Length: 291
Image 1 (tube, rainbow, N blue to C red):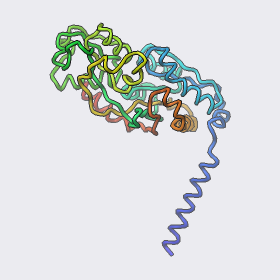
Image 2 (image 1 turned 180 degrees about the vertical axis):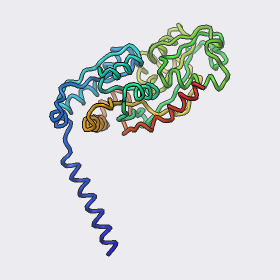
Image 3 (image 1 turned 135 degrees about the horizontal axis):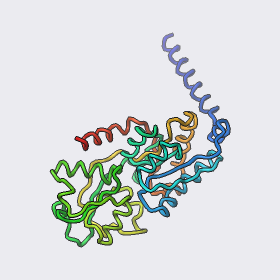
Image 4 (image 1 turned 90 degrees about the horizontal axis):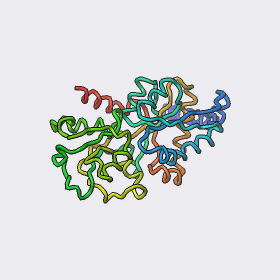
């Protein structure tokens, strides 16, 4: 009898779940119900504005189709400007690196919806240090007294993770290198190393691979250090948006996983469902850097 009751209970739960799935509002219905006319999307400037538009066009197109509203792409000069844009409600949805997501969650009420996967299907990436092939700079020791670039103060792979690695090695970048700059973005760092304007820079393997064959070749560089795996970048929405809308955006983004041509254009492996606690490890790294 108890077994029969357990079976009936399980069947009821399945029926409820099925009914919820069948009668859940579509993104268009959610937008109509909430009176949404436009959603504003922005992405941290890891590449130039032309490349940024090319990479994110599939997301813009997909969201416009799913919600039936205008999706406007907002361009920002740096990571901090994006966070400020969310804070002042000028941006609704944003692509953020792990550290900039943590900052946006604290300052702008951002909530992680999905985490980006690499082309190989891993929900994460690695910080790397690169030098120019043929430069003779094959180790971090070789870079002593040379010119160096981090990307942005709020970049995880371009600043936070390599800074912690330098700290472990007892290296103070301002004293170790002859010159230290912030390039503003991963593409800028990579191209400056290729052109010989900088001796070394930190970037990441995911953004490095996105422009391979278009702006440079792998054989143009030495990769002299690779970090442990870092949790992937997030697409987040503002917490003050209706929960129903945030859930609809999350489901719409996960639906992109079925569009192989879109993923090829974005040069990633799609997205997985995210939660804020996924980024607690980044919060710990930020504390470690402060100490």
